[in-house]
Length: 194
Image (cartoon, rainbow, N blue to C red; front, side, top):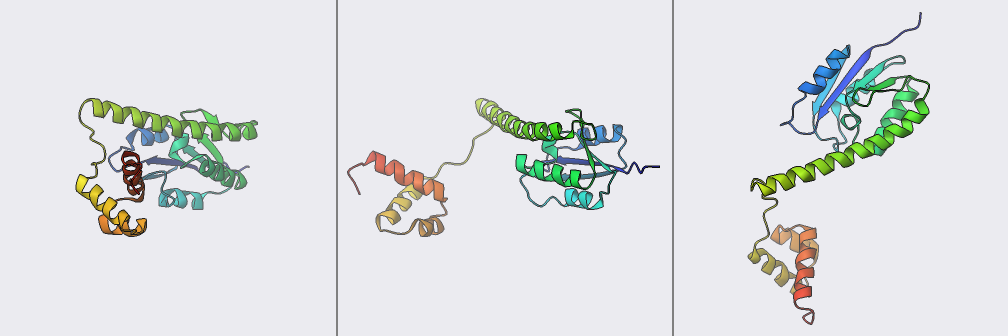
C-alpha cells in the first residue's frame, strides 16, 4: 500500500503584532498532522520554522498553507520552494486559492502560482499604501521625521569642504539617500553656486 505521508501546515505573519489565529484555524480544519508557524517578515531569509518543516518532509508528504504570500518572500523564492517540494515528491496545497499540486495540471499550476505570488505581494503593498494614506488623513500616521535645517546645513557645509559622502553620513547620521537629496535640492535652489 502506498504511503500517504504526513500533512504539514505552515503559517506566518509578518510582525509580532499580527495574529496567527485565522491561519492556524484554517490549517486545523484541513486536518494537518504538524504545524510550523512563525512571526517574522517574509523578507527575512532566515525562517527557522519553515526550514525545520522542510527538513522533516518526505516523499508522499503534503504541505498546506493558507495563501501563497505566507510561504515565500517573492516570486523567485516561491519558485525555489515549489521546485524543492516537487523534487522531493511533496504536494503543496494552498487553501485560499484552492490549488493542489497533486493534480494532473502540476506544471500549469507552477507557472500560475508564480504569477499569483507576485500579484499577492503587489496587493499587499497596495493595501499597505492605502492604510498609510488613510492613517495620514486621520492624522495618525506622521511618517518619517523630517531632517532638521541644522542637519541640512551641516551636510551642505561638509560637502562644500569636499568631505566624502560616506564621511558626511558618519558625522551627521543622515542617510546616503537623504544626503544626495539635500545636495540636489541645494543645487536646484542655487544653480550658479558650486
